[in-house]
View 1 (cartoon, rainbow, N blue to C red):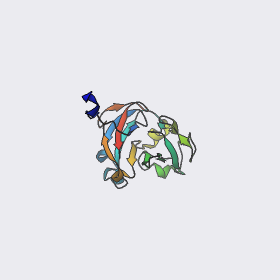
View 2: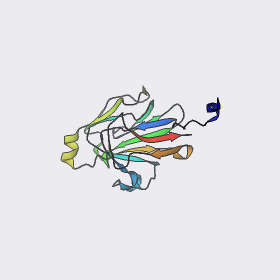
View 3: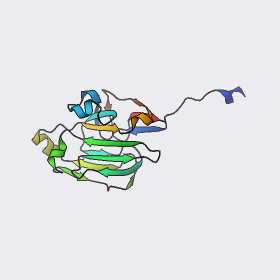
View 4: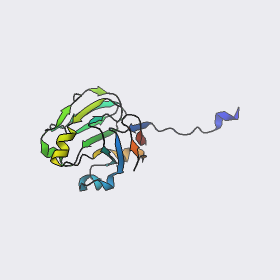
Length: 163
């Protein structure tokens, strides 16, 4: 009977999954001061071993950059996030990127959003470190989970959030 009054362990409201297979690194280790300095927000980065970038959670695909190097998502609960693929990839003007989903569409965690040509990026010497940035982190409590670990896209949780 007294089990009713015991506090249940709190489960995070939201789990953000890896957007690609690879190794997670802290944002501070990203070789771009905009990301390492957290100018856009806090988050985590993955050094990708796969060329398909997927949605880290369910939500609306609120933005796909014209150059296809980044996309933004908004969840129904208001969480806003951005996935930025590679460093200085905006300079490629879309070369080597392919959109696999449409801006404005409702997408599910793990759904493919953008594919990049890994051999072209290697040939051009592009650092493909991919960042997941929380754009409104002050509105959430969050915990980064996977620093330094190998992760699988759509399976491994890399950030837990709650309001």
